[in-house]
Image (cartoon, rainbow, N blue to C red; front, side, top):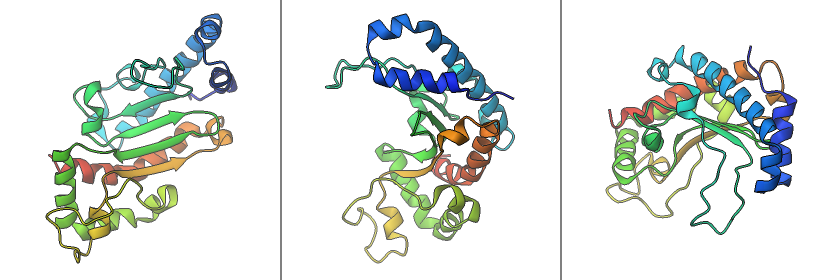
Amino acid sequence: MPHISPPTFQFLGDLKANNNRDWFTTNKPRYEAAHKEFLLFTDALIAEIAQFDPGIAHYTAKDCVFRIYRDVRFSKDKMPYKTHFGAHVTAAPKKSEIHTRAGYYLHLEPGATMLAGGAYLPEATWLKAIRQEIAYCTEEFLGILNNPDFKKYFGDMAGEKLIKTPRDYPAEHPAIELLKHKSFLATHYCTDEQVLSEGFLRHCAEVFRAMQPFDQFLNRSTD
C-alpha cells in the first residue's frame, strides 16, 4: 500500500531550512523521489475516494498535484519553493477551476499536515447559491455539520465570516450565523506520526468519506 516515507518528510523539512535555488538544484534527486512518492500516494487516494465519490474517478495525481515552484512575481516573499506538497481532488473540469467546486485537499508538511475541503472564498455567484441552499435546507445542513463523523474529524465548520448580516437575509433568520460565512471549510490536522504510519492512506480515506456529504451539499447549490 502506498505510504509517505521518512525521506519524503525529511526532504520537505530540509527544503524549509534551505529554500534557495542552489540547494534545490543540488538536492534535485531527493525532490524527484519525494515527488514521485507523493504522486503514487495521491493516485491511491483518488482510487479510495472514488469508491464513495465516483465523480472524481477519471482524475489522476498529475491532474491534482500542485507545482512546488512558487510564483513570486507579485509577492513580497521571494522564496522560490513551497515547503509542502499539495493536491486538490475535485470534479472541476479544469485544474484552473478547482475553486469552483468543493473537493478534497491534502496538504503534506512536517508539523502542519492537514486534510481539508469545502469552499474557500467562493466567487459571488457560488457564494449566493450556497447561502440560498443553506437558507432553504437549514435542517439538512445542520444535520451534516452535527453528524458524529463530521464532528469527530472536523469539529465545527470554519471559514471567514461577515460581521454584519448578509444582504437579502433578515437578522432573525435561524441560520444567520451560517449565512454570515464567506468561506465554508472543514479541516482536519494530522500528526507527523499519523502521516508516517502504514495506515495513513486509510485514515485519509476515512476523513474524506466523512467530508463527502458536506462537499456534496455545497456543490449541489450550483448543480
